[in-house]
Length: 495
Image 1: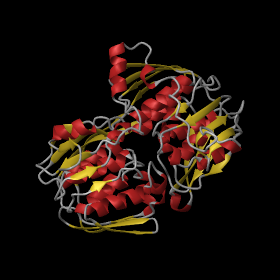
Image 2: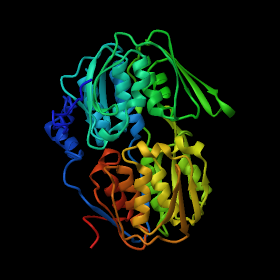
Image 3: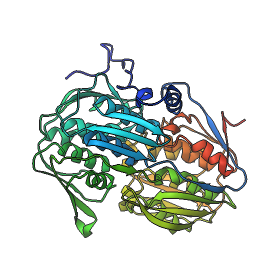
């Protein structure tokens, strides 16, 4: 088997441009509008680091709507590609990750137009109607986009090469590929360990399978279901612990037949069954505010004394609210207001006031509902009185970075007492502000960067992150949003 994307000397080749071009998604756009979209995206994660420093200061006050949910934004683009007719999306997250998925969808045959801030129009090709892309599908840092699109390509009669930045090239893809290969896909070439760059060839028709997930993972589940769209009969996924269900919800919205039944010990698991080869119809998708992005201003409001912040329209899907549950257990003053339905999801406004937090024990079974929020929870725990034990964090080791190690190093750099026991992270606070004053290595991980910038807003001394460029992958407006609330965040290292 060849090693894609390398020269004979074993060094990675220069990464190809993303197929379709990130700056050319919206054919009907004006040049000025397209330029504005391009400016939101870091040119390369291989460019010079851009240190950023957060300084302690006064209270945070105000109201904001966090950016659109990243998980739903990816899926809206993907199902818009697979549907027949027009899909209109409002509130799309226009971060680098989602725009990479949009570029891939365009390269596979969709017509995609940006009609305004967060408003996009997609004309799909239908199941079985995709074309081979003319170039590499470059997903940058987008783990979700690349893995879900592998499910799409792995179930359709197309061949595509997947690649990404230095961080994505380190992330394991084998557990995504394993079930897709059972469904008839072929890996034509791959980097060592089943990583990108890799070339995947899909079958004329996928083979329906019954697959039990080795770990609780919405990405693996979604990849199997998306491949199963082109399979005759039924595709079934069994999960021992329920993971995010956005794919199941959105498949139904587009017209697929999906059933979900409780399973496993205590009914904590789920069995998801998809009837294959449906006719998906384009529809309207309203993207709610991302609870993972909302977590950063939310925790900032809790730890900066005197703060009061309202977060508008935040998704309250019970499989995404583990952080809020945990923070309330810690004593956080978080009030749900105006709970309502938008785009098939429950949303609410959250009023958050500065609070005295206490340490708690976070059960491992809660991890799937807050897997992206552990870095910011660790920051909250550093300000709490007592010990917070976060159990069962194995999945953090295979995110954009080894997040468990990166969080631990960031805590150590800022004078926080911590321990790692197996896959558990234990953080001990004294009920006051940690020392701060450290520089945190982000390892190209946007959530590590934002979490420790939040720490710097209330620590004893400023906190610097070594690179803030990748924040644009999920929260392009993070800095202006925090500045509008009263935060002090500046370019460069602390003086």
